Image (tube, rainbow, N blue to C red; front, side, top):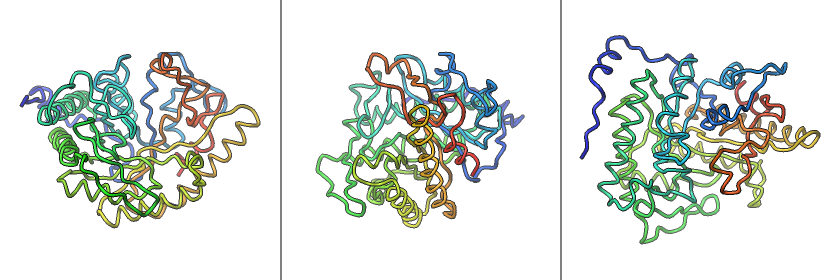
Length: 371
């Protein structure tokens, strides 16, 4: 197994000087965050952001002045456009840390988005068996984290996998998502590779602790409104290690499956409380998003509903002591901007950002950051 060793001189310098950038808010306090992984590409494309008076303002400064205290950054292994790779992540994390913002790193262990529909093994890792894939998880995790350490960035949280209710690094680490209607669970199938998936998670966990012993390791699944106790029971039963539970929550999207946002928020609150009580670990809302599209009067109407939904959700979780925080996913998206890889795919721009058509923070984002 390859051993990645943090450079001796750099490590000694950090030990002697303690020169990590210091977060403005203490570890353990409620995180009011945003995943801004697209921001560097947006700025490269000359997308601008504005304060309430219409003055052009750095996006991070703008959101920090509204109350943001943390950022989340995804890591792809070798994305075709070069964004969200090690170098991009280190630049963005350093920029955030210099402002006193806390940092979450989100490892996808893929060359593109990893989610419940896609957990594709990176091209450079294809054909490897379970043992070699565990080594790849470890090596990739350490490579990125040691680069952050050299830059003086100390992540407070590290996600090992992104939205993995059915495992990661398919097919080797694939499991069945058994989330059925709210409080029932489908039976596990013989094809489930829980031992492999939990093994990948533990390989990432150990790598995180080697680089940053105090970092909180998150295992992250989607759909906070769905019953998830079964997933974390299976993770523990198969030896998977984690410090914190991460959930995604997109309550305005549940209407497509017949669940009003009010019910989605209620179920999410119930599940957060259940997960904390059952597994004795904090819960982080690692992603949240509200519909925010439209122009003119249509935009005003949708934005007002989004603010109502956000307010309701934050009110529900406000008194849950072990709810660690909320991260809005790519709130800075507006105006139909789309990343380079979306163009050949024929995909539209992300429509659940939380900036107005004029490039200003929306009411829902201000509600979150002003909590």
